Length: 69
Image 1 (cartoon, rainbow, N blue to C red):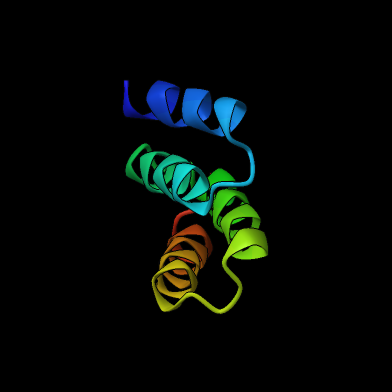
Image 2: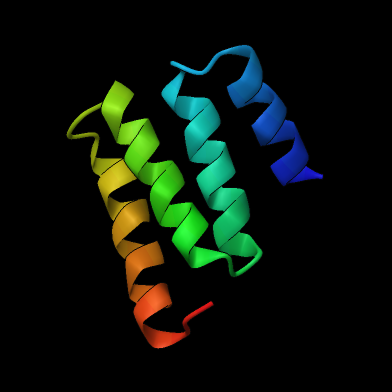
């Protein structure tokens, strides 16, 4: 349900980083790490250099390296 909500949020306001961040967190929770990294990348377009986004992307990238999709 969280992923669906986040995708709806992104559809309604595509330039809002928080929507992309929620999508990334949902994907990470579902162990869809590549999608999570991509969503964090999209969020970083709108909030470049945001430490929380960089950390989230790093964690998803690390999880992807350990446990590929």
